Image (cartoon, rainbow, N blue to C red):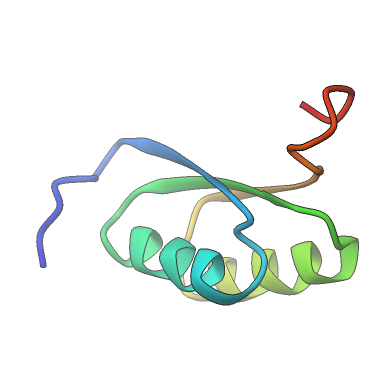
Length: 71
């Protein structure tokens, strides 16, 4: 699938696990730069490493989007 995401940046909340992580991998495969967040620091590190190994330009941030101070 060609989503024409080369050169674009996408933010994924809940991107360190499950469907969010799968979405991050798909976006990287489509050429997007991916910024993602999640609540678990260890999952953030693991996901970032996995995405970088797949050639992704990524930023992973520990954040809970239900907390204004994290946003």
